[in-house]
Image (cartoon, rainbow, N blue to C red; front, side):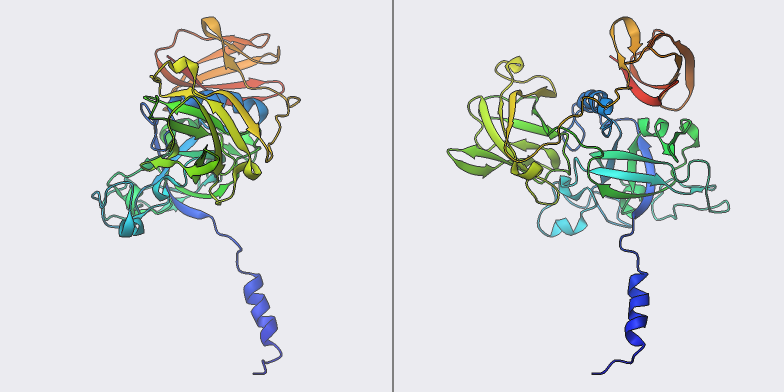
Length: 392
């Protein structure tokens, strides 16, 4: 068949102007935390907080900025439609949480417009009703990197009708940036806006995965938690008598695996990422059951002993990188790496300001705070940012 001379040009105009990739778009909500002892992916609040304090020092993503994705994609169906983990034909009901297979993956989030009417996630109702509709505000276009640590299976419109709904950890509302500028905490101004997002590799990834043993791990029952992943986790394998054997995901907790040979104290492992590729080019890891556990682990997560990686590749930590994130020391002193001057503001998770404190010679003395999670926002001559402060 001979094509008209102008048809190839028309085809090129049509194809070349098609978007190569469209962001996932849904509704945004927020929640206060993953609870105890673990979030749905198998990662505890304490691990997320501790790793965030470490990783932000080298400019990596902060895993305390975590989110939950929908377990089910069942528009108009608000009961529990199937047991978890989803199996067989029930997998047709799976939401973007994907039976835990998207745990540990990073997202780049961007907030959209906000409804000036009612947006309450009610069953069988539009997300915006009444008022004059959707409108931009000062937070439209604000963005952040976040990691998947939890799930949403609630029987409401957000968790069932919005396929790409994202439930944000509340600390994110105080850490959003727009055009590189840190925005004021949203607090009560967060009214469940639209959100767009994409899966992305872990931002500025350095080092290699971290391995923990979960609560109740012991001889004949070794349950492993894997964090700090470049691109999520689809599999864990253990070397047993020179043969690689697959570990079993614990339900749909995508970062928690039961080892196939749970005896002894020394283990050799390798990982597969969300692209079904070997993590870090096929690197393997030797590690030991933590002595701190004794015969059985009692904490939600205890870091493995004597971790040694072999082969493959790693992203070496750049110790010359500027380390500007503060850390909480003894006697309620927030210590900054530099001896700079500035101010520190303390906020509750709801965005209410508690107090403003001076930073003198790189130190800020905190007032006596009640137990719980607070947000500290600092401003120095050479840096500014926000950090979660957990008072045990």
